[in-house]
Length: 209
Image (cartoon, rainbow, N blue to C red; front, top):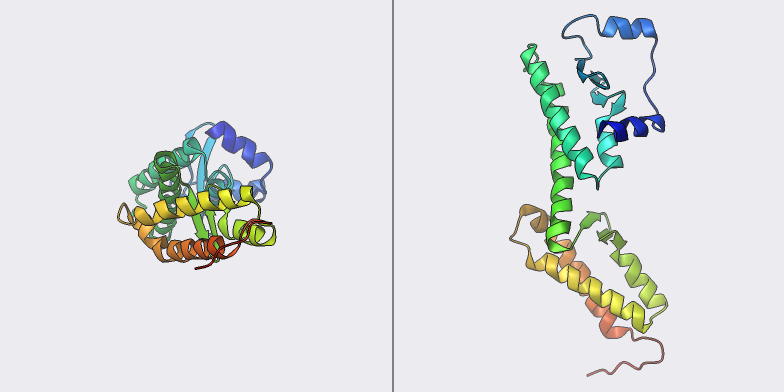
C-alpha cells in the first residue's frame, strides 16, 4: 500500500513549509501536528483539520483509490493505529482530531461495502444528484442515447440495466445502503420502463393497446 501511496504523492500537490517550521512542529512527543511515524516511510500528521499521510490528505487518497481494497483497508488500519498512538500520548479528548478520523473511517467503510456488494451481487452503484451509476455506467445517459438513436442493441442494453435496477429494489431490506436509494431506484426503473414501452428500435413499429 505504501509504495502506491508514495507514487501517488509524486503527482499530488503537497503542503509546503520551511524546514525551520517543520522542526518546530515536531519537537515534542505530542506536538500540534500529532506526528506518528510507525515505519521509516510512513508519517502521519494532523494539520489544519486534516489527517495527512506522507503530506497527503487521507481523504484525497481514499477518493483517488475507491476500488482498491488494499489501499482502503491499509488506510483504515493506519488511521486506527494513529488514533491509538495519539490517545496513548494523552490526546483522547481531541474532539476535532477524533471527528476527522471517524469521518474518514465512515467513508472507507462505505466504499468497502460498495465493493463488497459489487462482488457478491454483481452490482456496483452510486447515486449523486440526478446521476445514477451502475457498474460505472450512467443510466440516465444511456436512456437519453437510446431515445436519440433507438437500436435493437441499445434496447437490449437498456433492458439489462433495468434488470439491475430491479435487483437493487429487491435487495431493499438487505442493508441500509439499499434503503437509502430505494425511491431514486424506483423512479429510475419507472423511467426506463416508460421509455422501453414508448420508444421502439428504428424501423420497428410499437403496438399500443
